[in-house]
Image (tube, rainbow, N blue to C red; front, side):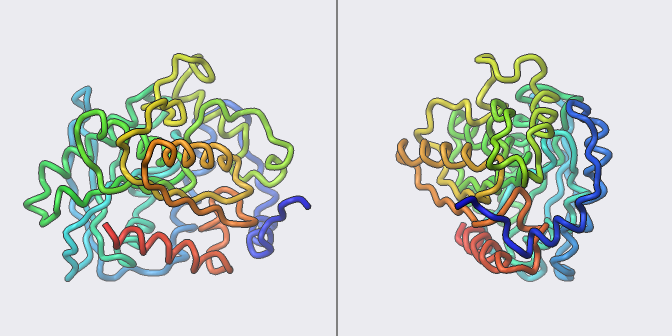
Length: 311
C-alpha cells in the first residue's frame, strides 16, 4: 500500500495548491517566492512574551562579519545553549524571518538560542555557509562565561537548508577539536545528488526535486553531483562519522530527504555515534508548520522540547 498524506496536512496543502513555483534553477525568484511565507507559518505557535534578544557579530573564516542574535527567556538560566541555523534551501530565509520561530523555541524550552544570519547562495558558494555557522559556534564558546553558558552544553540545530550548515558545523567542530553536546537536525538538506525524482515521493513533494536542484546548484555550481563536493558543503558526502556529536534527526516519510536522512543516521550509528531518528507518517517536507495544530504537532513538539531541555 502506498504511503498517504496525513489528512490534516493534505487539507492544508489543498488550500495552497494554486501556487505556481518559479522555474527550475532560478534561485533569486525562488527566494522571492518563499521568503514571505516564513513568518506567517511560524506565527501559528502563538506569542512568546518572555523572550528577547541581543545582537552581536562573529567573524567568519574570510573575515566577513556575520550577524548574530542571542535569544533568552526572562528568568531562565539553564546553562545550556543552541546555535541555530535557519532554513530556506540554502538560498532564502534569514534570522529576521525566523524571529517568531526562534522566540517560540526559547519560550517552550527556556534554553538560549544563538541564531546565525549566515550568508546565502548564490551570493556565496561551497563551504562558506558552513564556515559562517561555525563562526557562531566559536563566538558562543568565546563568550559563554559572560552569558552563563557551559561550553560543554552547546548544540547546533538547523531545519531544512539550515540543517546543511548545522551538520557541516558538527563535522568542523569534530575536526577542530571542539566537543558539541548534540546536533539537532530537522529534515536537513544533506545530499546534492538527490535531484532525480522518485515516483513515490515526487507527487507530494512540498520541497520539490526542481527546488532541490536549484538550491544545490546555487551553492555548488557545476560541481553539483561530482566527486569534488566537500562534506562541509553537502554533509552526506562525509566518509568519516567517528567522533561526531550525538544526533537527533527528524523527517517525514513523504519528504524527498527521507532516504538521505535514513542513510545519514545509519552511518552515524555504525560509527558509534548515539543517534535518535524520528520518521513521521504521512508527512512531507515542512510537516511541522504545514500541519500545525494537527495530530503530529504534539509529537514533534514534545520530542524537540525534550531533546533541547536535556542539553
